[in-house]
Image (cartoon, rainbow, N blue to C red; front, side, top):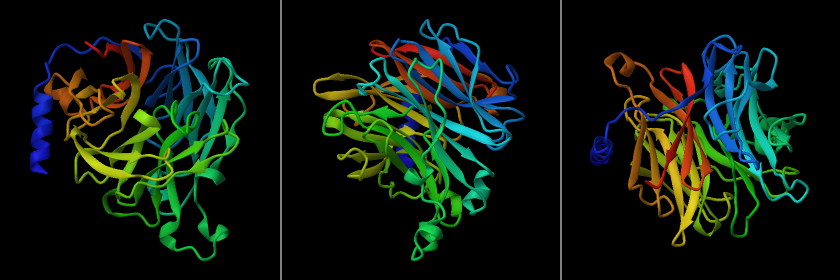
Length: 391
């Protein structure tokens, strides 16, 4: 453990500490009808426009309450952003964890079809972990690049396992799924191998009674092979405390999932590898190259070279607090991460007392540029930066 932490500290200290990467402001807390904006997610539509989603928290910063899902669009690669559009308003209750993905393989929609998966909830997370409430799973779609959206479709019965006694009288209490959350961040679609076209959403749930230090959490995925007509659950990650997650395709049509460790006993990202499109997990392990303070992270396939997929990964890399937002590049399917770019970090003692850089999500702007949408300066802003990843 000490050796791994020392490795992480040395890796971070080797980065050049320069002025913060330039950014454009997308959401500012206290403006445009919401007290706080959190949980960023971003994709690019078929027309090349960027779509930045977030939770718009109406009255405060808490995870539960009157929370909407909002969207802004950029037609100039992230330099300027449109006025916000409210996509989901669940009255006075919570709609959150926006997880968008672009389906490019449905012949009915040559301009692509965007899926926006999200969750609704009727109680606080810890209450639901104790069996007092329900989280549901929904999606909406857009066939015009995000300008208009369909009515919502509820897929809870296909991808969640609540209320086991009603479905299976022989169940054991520990099998009961309680809390549930997509992503957060973008979803993915396989481009190669036997599962090409499959849309997969990384997710997590809690199992049975509330566990110590988040040990009741398990990451999992769900997927569709028929453009949203039906959905299937993938296997859960076996490591206790595996929580918020992001998934991407590695070479040969295989899957890598990158996961938050809610227990915090090991301040590193959990990795899951699957050879069958997320149905089962071939290998799970902690990656000492990816330190983490118990926060969300984002992983994205951005190119291919020499038979391997080139991946980008972003997270707050300080093991003690949400700070030191770093973009890393891997040229070998995520086995090593030799290229690291510092995106944002606190520069004063006062800034360091608060969460400076927290949740983030990645998008491929063009062949040479990765975009990162992230929470900044104690959740006062969600901002966007464009980084040339191959320099």
